[in-house]
Length: 292
Ligand code: PAF
Image: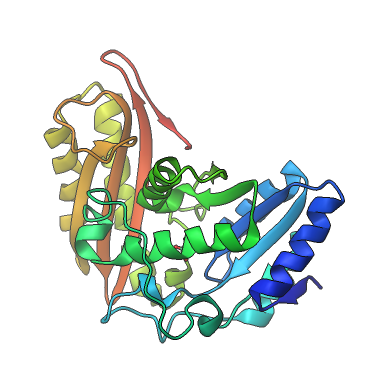
């Protein structure tokens, strides 16, 4: 069973011990409810060597007032078991007051990057994500931190934060893990009924319809976006939030496709909001789907 610490003081002591024995520090930040997607991050960290810390913390500041904070799944014992199976060295599972003591007043915001796509639909979300991730970096002092491509905008915003604030942590991105039928793994998939689970496939089908247009030579971003929208909007029980075709470096909307292109989608399936994305590498004459 992996050791668990709950305070920043204990975390720093254990990490300092690992560092003094010559190990580099790897951090896998999570909100728990670990699935194969998280396991792939843990395996990547384990394979890179060093001392692997997993944080398990459902971060209240990244949830909006009408979001699922109170019902977010918290299967802590199962998560601990999973961390053990994947060879994590330490689990950091702080209570909320350890991260946000009374009177907490400092937040990090990547202006302009945090209020588009997910940020437009979930005001304040990335302010919460950036704040907690920077805090985790300062608490654990990792050399490398691991994130999933599934949350593409999160990765882009966090990389920008790290560049802007000279944060000396390398952010390593791991490919999205999917079920055999293509559904992207998400801790929120547990909310889906069997029928909704089938409908949720509209997200990946929509993205693949857009991708196929690009692979067939389409370079007009609006035409690709329409292809993505068409599939999602044509699926009963699925309410599209957005379908976007943007630069994967800057999140800027594109007119003509070139470089690293992100196809991103968000939709509500029943009461559950899901997101997904695909990444393409595009030139005028060639295009390919790339994992990260
Ligand atoms: O991706 C997540 O699970 C969360 O946004 C993160 C990075 C752990 C911050 O709370």
